[in-house]
Image (cartoon, rainbow, N blue to C red):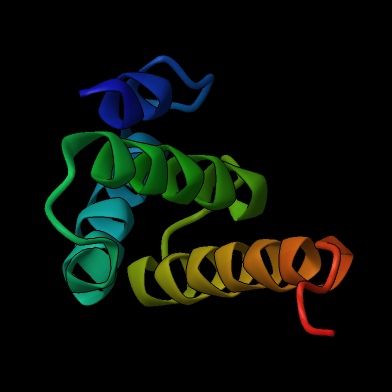
Length: 91
């Protein structure tokens, strides 16, 4: 999957990468049901989660729960920003 490739190719040491992968897997379990069954939608959501996770991770990341929560917050903020910028269709 593309999302795991994004994470696996990030420049982190083996311990940090292990924590990041675990945080990704746990976060995805929490939100997977929100994205339907279309493989394209699922992969896009997984890529967004991977990028959100990498945006909050650092080499010293050792707390899976904190990384997971930070990534989910970053992802939610991204959706809010897009929704706020989208033109209103209500008349």
